[in-house]
Amino acid sequence: MNHPKEEKTLILIKPDALQRNLFGEIVQRFERKGLKIIGIKMMHLNETILREHYKHHAEKPFFKSLAGYMSSSPIIAIALSGVRAVSAVRLIVGPTKGHAADAGSIRGDFSMSGQSNLVHASDPDENPEEEVKRFFNDDELFSYHKIDFDLIYGAELKD
Image (cartoon, rainbow, N blue to C red; front, side, top):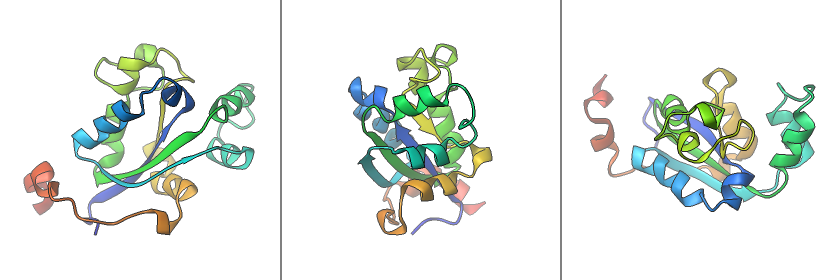
């Protein structure tokens, strides 16, 4: 069962990460941080889901290129949970443009691009829980207790 302070957030492992064999490295960073994987699946993105997911970009000139890139191979959707998971994931991923991301972040270590930047991470302003629902049905998400939860969060659980 989720602790009341746990948040859900979405990660999409993009085509360039799969093509470059970085899936394991990327997932390992979230696991090492202490985030809990509550859902994971590989899928092809069709135009409907791409238009919905990138609706804020759908009318921009680069949308066609973005949609082509995101549908060029499968992606892996991952739902994560944890206390302050959204901000923790954004820190692990780094800023959008890989060339501007700090070393130690996923994009800082492995990306130079703004589009081919390995992962999508939910933006806190764009309702991460809704993004999770876009890619996962309720029966594809799992609620469970991790034995290391108290050690990862310590006294913060008592706040």
